[in-house]
Length: 315
Length: 315
Image (cartoon, rainbow over all chains, first blue to last red; front, side, top):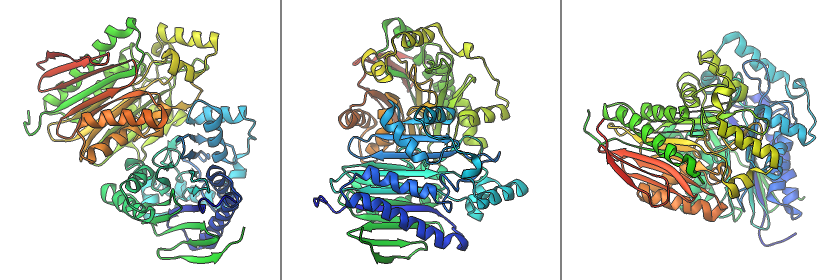
């Protein structure tokens, strides 16, 4: 392994009022994703490959609202969003309101690498998936009993999305990864099924470059989670990198950006950050956020405010 | 009229290699839009109403690539994007890949004011338009002979979008408006038909909060135009506001942000800016950008680098 720089990865599995029956599976899922990404980094692989593999693992895990486990929109369909970005040339790929595919983050990477564009949405994103030979999967294969139950609840009580998010905290939420590799390249990826009972075509912050994720080799990488509308209003991930540019550590930038989002628009959510030297940061002002980090073979993870469980990991 | 602050508005009609046969109509169109917006501001109206009315006027003008005059995508369809934002609470509304409506910016404002969301895309945006009672219009009513000619050229020569933008400069481009009203509220709006022969579902910077437009009463408002993929990579409009926050004038922020976009990602385009005290800025590194500004009853406008035509306007 190239020893120029100790690589590092940080994962989130969503910032919201994660219920107790999701707690253990959420903590486990982010640890698994961190290990998958770290193995790639540790063997000299790229930050881009690491965040893609980590987010794929989270998309495949039904406890998280992304890929399998996605929420249902107001008409009971699944529409997913994802973004991936790398920090050397700021190349980025994003898909929004895409349906019937297993791993939106993989499609986002193909948008980045195989088209002249950065963002494809709706039927166009699905046309591109078909062109790339990506298998179409059934809605049933993406939807869990839990997601369907949340949707039935919405249909019955007709609560609005704001009530959902602010009071019940029920909508699951977003996964993401940020990493720096041993060559000093940073990358980030974010993926989501969105908010339960969202309008058809609603897109949150996740696939939006600068809001759901942003990175630049000069500063670091960030991935956001939470109430997407408010995250977009303050372009949360871009804001984190501006704070690093102004001299803040990744941890201070995470703290200040969450504080700013709450002060400016009363937004709730969380963010994970890695600096271009491997310093790690995270913060959230929701009840819980599932997160994990791996650096120097040390795994850290948590769920509640103040949590920081530590264990060794030898890839 | 409230005299607390002299209101101001700046308009752009796209930054690209505007051909001579579009030159006069482009200059005229941005002046008309500036006057429409300024009349609202001068009579005490809001910056939000002013930018919406100005962009509607540009959408209705077939010389510009937005609303009527939009380009055709690779399969000969029209898919339009628009955003609107106000700077007091950072409320924003956006639509992307919406079809068969006349004024996407009006729909974006309805997303902001009538939903819990900020962004609706594709069929969901059209479902919402129908719900709001917005009339569906035919593709033919949106497409000009010129736009169809560009598309036929693409079909014949199969040039890629990058070639289109970088060499031929053929794809038309985006309209936008920024304004500050006499109460010190800022607003911005951007609208586009995108790039000729774009993939189905391709979304550029225009509807992306922070890229195609951004505003905050604490600093000012910005609207961008040009090669959307590169604008998104540097979140151009958000970048302008960070520079103002750091003490730059709106003009210096416009200059520096265009310079930064070129240095970091070789991006070409333009930006218009208004500070929260009414100072005006604009810059572009394309061959031409149609722009106009109106403040203290003085209309300024231009097309080529260095242009600054001045005339009086009494609303």
